[in-house]
Length: 282
Image 1 (tube, rainbow, N blue to C red):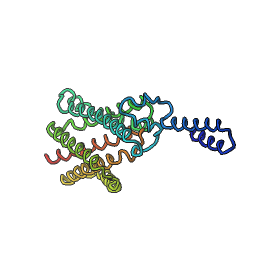
Image 2 (image 1 turned 90 degrees about the horizontal axis):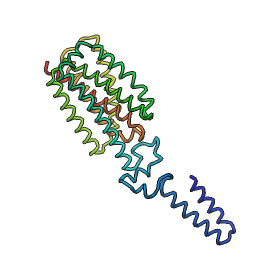
Image 3 (image 1 turned 30 degrees about the vertical axis):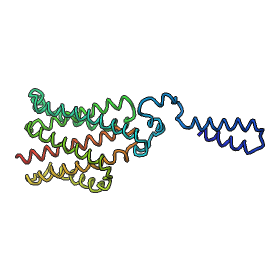
Image 4 (image 1 turned 180 degrees about the vertical axis):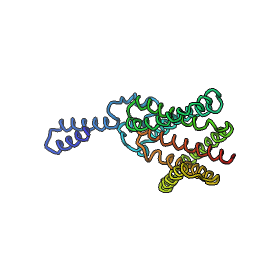
């Protein structure tokens, strides 16, 4: 902005009657302005050429800009950050999950203390609100995200203590294969799955209503199978939708909401696959 005003002032002054020496000085001023505008303020030219992230400096003012509107380097940095944090979250959850399946002492503790599941569920709900509010407050956002992940992991591990370890392993590897396949397909095809939004959210309300009715009315085995299978398909669709909108829906500072969305998609997909396998076995 400052350099643009300098150029306009220079052009205005040159339009008047000025000595040729002064006009030459103004020409030099314009050339200096154009040179300084070619790189962001505060970055040395030699420093900016170091490394392979030169394009990141071109987006130094992309606060609250959608990721899709930034350079390739910024988009890749955002995706790497989201999936690195997501992998850590899933690693923590996997550790709790297999501990409840294969460590007898931990499994016995969860069976005898059912209050742990209630506390973990309450903690996940309580932490979610401040996590959304303080998503840009480092390092508080990381502490809240870690606490929220551990709470959900405890809740998941408490919910599978009565499931045979073989079923847990089958559900885990099946979920892993589906998530990997859908993620690779979405990024490779570059398709926009925004058209699924209406159907997915309508299906989610139907799923919530059926889950509420199951508490009060006993359903048959067939209905339970349909519920589990429909839920698995629904959250596979949500994974497609949220992955394709990763760069269209979020700004470069919204990596925590993006991580939360993908993490919940994968957890819900796993739980419905687990339920489907358990019901099929019964």
